[in-house]
Image 1 (cartoon, rainbow, N blue to C red):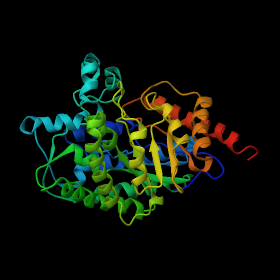
Image 2 (image 1 turned 180 degrees about the horizontal axis):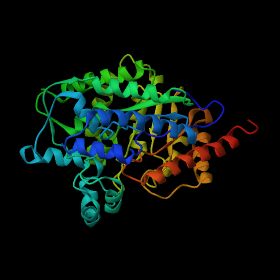
Image 3 (image 1 turned 180 degrees about the vertical axis):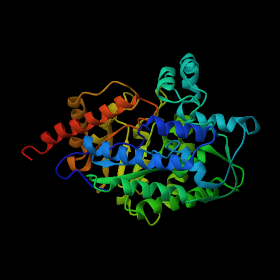
Image 4 (image 1 turned 90 degrees about the horizontal axis):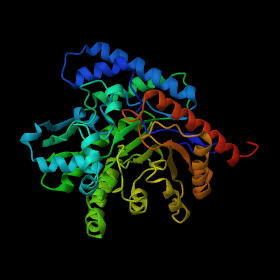
Length: 408
């Protein structure tokens, strides 16, 4: 990973809005309707090229393909794995899937704010205001289908789609100025908590089988010269489901397995090629059950990654910059705080973005900070607002750099 040697670099977490016509093609595909695959492939290539150029034109330094080909930050992997089958939710062990789907919020939060969830939660568990769903997501598009996938055989990776992603991204980057490029992928623990295991004899065997499969994707991305971004909501999600001191021992045991599986998937890959994005589930919801960063930071340091991407603009977590005043960032690591919030259409003021960046630079050192967003924008804010937020990110980083490198 590149570091902020003479100015604060900027990036984001991956998911940007698809153009409406490409979105419609994917809506048809996800809904099982006939789709002209050649038209989809051609439009995907031009859409990636457009999204790459737009990021660069705004001045974002470390860019991606906008996740144009992916269903979501984790669900995309379904079509890339053998051994996983879909079942109607009524034909499965419903309790498992309810639990998996609620990593976004605890039973306590749902009980306390029951009317909020009843009024705002969609059929797939996404707490996005209905007007946003209706305006920006075509009817019938399934961004987060119910977790009704079951592992019934050996999990094996199919590399066709990642090869296409890599080739499309490489072509789009030709002649486009950027500091670095990354591709997001899912963590083994994230998939393991969303799929029910009916095949492997133990949880450990199951997690490591998924890690072995995903290792092929990870190596394909890094061998192609891109930085690998690991997307993971499972650490905060599992801690949310195991609240209080009584659940801490169970969480620590599970987290050890999840981190070991991730590091197994990363074997042979230099940490300098990896950034880890820990997400608090992203949804526009109360978040009063979010575990504090202080309870998770020890997990971060065990992951074989150079960059740690954390939510820092989220109003539930912004105060946690104080943690870095007493917690030492390991040598050679890079902190990537989200200084732009993805869960509101309010556009941050550049001065405030700069202030957020300065807090982290003062705590861990200017060269160890890359300014990021909390999470992906797709389906959470209006596309026009998303791009305006990225412009503010770049401007805020410029203002912060002027103070951190005076006369530079």
